[in-house]
Image (cartoon, helix red, strand yellow):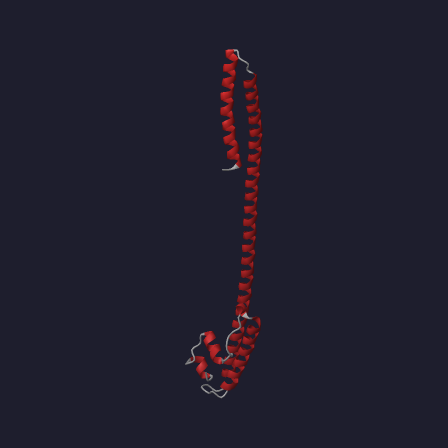
Length: 188
């Protein structure tokens, strides 16, 4: 039972007691008896009613202030959570953007290495010959090792690429089959 409810209950009891005291006062006055004691009782109950009403009003103001404070605290907590979620989302977006930039650089460097290998294969060796293949493979592996080393230093997603970089990992990274096509012409 809250304080406000207690004061409301007490106020109802006092009003009932005042009604009874007023009736007793009227009965004593109508009978012509000494009504001083009945009048004093009625005045005491009236004073108690005034004090209880004041206490009830104060209790209601206190409860309203507490409710307002709770609502304000809840609103501040919700705003803080929303701000934290927004900051987290912004950080995640920045990390994703950085990862996409690193992936684009890696993709571009890998394509450049294959274009150079293809140019060297076509320009320096006769058709069907594999005489220049070791040099081409060495250049591709060198470029790939440099790219992987840069990625390992950066640590994409906080984790370095596992294992030693090799032409096999380059081919599997690019999704290239090792049999047939351009790679078989250069000895891969």
